Structures are given as C-alpha cells and as structure tokens.
Image (tube, rainbow, N blue to C red; front, side):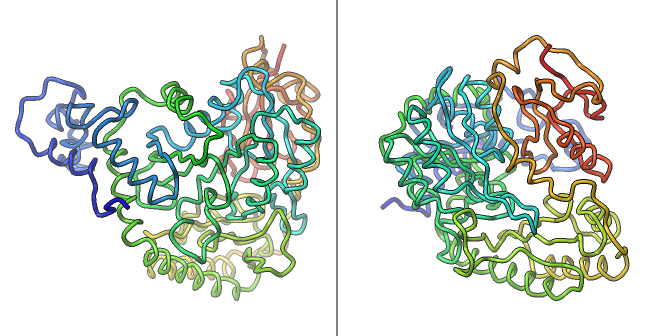
Length: 490
C-alpha cells in the first residue's frame, strides 16, 4: 500500500515555484513577471510562479522516472488500475490514444453510435473501421442509453476479427449499462474492452455509485478528473489493467496526441485531486449524493417537470442497469418549453446554469464542489421556470431525435479517415441530401456527432440539426458554424 497522503508532484512544483532563481527557460512570462495586467488582475500573479516547464526536479511526462511517475502510481492504486497515465489534453486524447494503441489501418472496432466526437477523431487518426451498434433507446424520454450485451455478442459473432470493443459508461445522462456482461463477452474473443468513463471518475469512491469500469472488467478506461472531481479543466487520466493492452503502445500513442509542453498546473491538480479522493472520497461523495437526492426529491414535486430516476432493480434493462444519481436530468417539455429555451431562461433570468440542454431535457452535474445554497438556487430557479414561463404546448418537428442515432443504418461508404481526407466540396444544405459527409457535425454539448465523415446525409438528420439550431442549440465540428453549408465528398 502506498501512502495516499503524499502529493509528490504537487510538492515538487511548490518547491520549484518558491525557489529563488533567474529563469532563462519557457514560458515567456518568466514566472508571472511578463503576464499582461488584465490577466494578472483576474488571476493574481502567484499562480504563474507555478506555471513551469519540465525542469529537472519536475520529471518528464513522456518518460516519467521521478515525481510524475510517483504521482501516477499513487493514482493507479487509488482508482484501482495496474497503470495510470496523466492526461493534459483532456479525455479526448485518452480516447484517441486508446484507439491508436489497439487498432491499425483497416482494423475493426465495435462501438456505440452515440460515442463522443473524440472517438470519431480516433477513427480518423487510426484508419480503423467502425462497427456501430445502436444503443438502447427510450422512446418516452427520447434518451439513448447504453449498448446491450446481446448487441455486442451479435456484433462479435459477425465480426470475430474485431480488435477491440469501446463503450460509453456512463452516458452523458448518467446511465450505466451492463458493463460486466459486456466485458465477459468481449474477453471471450480475447480482445480488450475500452471504456469512455469521462463522467465516472467518482464511481470508485462510494458504494452507492455505479460499479467503476475497471471493477466491472474493463481493460482500459479514460476519466475526466476535471468533470466531476477536483482537477483543473482539461486534466484527465487513462487507466489500464491486465495484459490485453500493450503499455508501450499506449505511451507512444499518447506522445502523438498530447502536448510536448504539458501544463504542470494541470498535472499537479491531478495529483491533488487524487489525494483528496483517496483520503476523503467517501465522505465527499456521501455529501454529494445527499445534495443530489435532495434536489431530485424537490424537483420531482414541481408541476410540469419530471426527473430521470434510477431503475433500482425495477424494470431494469441491459441498456439502463444503474443511474449515477449525482447526474440530474430534468424533462422540461411538460412546461411547453424546449430544453434550449429553458436553459436560456435559467441562465439569463434565474441565475442557474445547466451542464447541457437537449430538445426536451436539461442535465445538471452535482459534484463535490456544489453547496446547499446551489441546490436551493436550482430548486428555486426550476420552480420559477414552471410558474412564470410555462407555455401551453411545445411543437417539435422531430420530438424523437435520439431515434435518429438508434434506428438508422450506419453503413459507411468510406471509412471516417478516407472521407475526412477525401477531395471535398462545400454545398448549401439543400443540396447535400444523399451525399457523403466529409466532416464531423454535432450539437455541443454533449458532443455526440449526428453526422461523421463517411456517412450518408439524410433529410431527417438535416431537419433535426436545423431544429436544434432554431431552438438555440449550437452546432459544432463543421466548417460552417452558421450551419448553412456542409462539406461533402466530391
């Protein structure tokens, strides 16, 4: 057992920041002396003393032998991994590296269609061929859940040459599928199970939270420590266990997708966040769950609103086995409002900002950083929304948009890499139906692509994206942010 009280990287960074010396190395602001005054006024100057480069005492992220190695070993033990890598380019680079380390050009990988755009980037970078599975879909709530074990088994029977299976656990809505069963099936084919666990870094620290991906049998998992724990934005971790994945390939892949000038502020925040959870995680998560349950109970009583609930063993399905109860999804369509309209009202008039909005829902993240006052503000805001901004009805041209991701076929005319690098042209939307998409197009957040390179563009998909935009949603990934044109294969 390692001493989880230690923070080797944080301590080394503090010592370097406090040490008197003349700096003749990057970054150019020289420990804050050269920082622009408006930025210094916002952040103060002390933080910049710790914005250091790879000095001798601070180790090297790509060949760690000192304090970074020690910090990663502590993290591996705390999160239940055999080896852990710190990530400074977010979980995005971790997902990309996982695909690059397990799949080469033309190799097949099985994954859900509602993956994050980072997985599509991994396909483009690696040249892997996606075998997409439709996640389980709830037509009443219009929410896509997890892929099911049966779907994975069927796909592996049809594609026994697949090199890996990748799944999302939990989804952006906090829904967890039957990951243990998926791991068991995947391992029967002696291939690794990769997990995008960006929103599940807290699972390892409380028994009332869903089973962590590694404990469920995953070979590799990527976690956004900044999303739900106490690290700085962009700070994430990649964990592995077992021998199905070559550690050297992970390290080499990460060198391709991470900055060669990693931020030590981000790295040190990972060290500190790990210590915080290792020492106080259960207490912090107990308090977080208490706040979340208080919010869920009170919001459920507001007329016109409903809250996504944990199945609790009743009517559970393989695509929705458990719910992370710190994730709060509220259906607002009963107020005659779209999620985008409700989000705008809450933000501009009621001092409440959600994590993301969709056509019929708002989703809120409740974490160790939230307070009783936050929950009170949330409940008051939603109460005012229901009383003062309610409309008679909500008209949606396509109320079941998630069904677009779960029922349409996903045959690709080109691999994502081929389509991304193919000769292309930009056309008005009206001329793109039945053409092959050459870019990633997704509402953000949550960043799940509705179109990707290699897919055929259809009118229902265009209608949905235009509806999202008309109701205040933001379309990202594509070249034309106004979404008047699309890039297609020529």
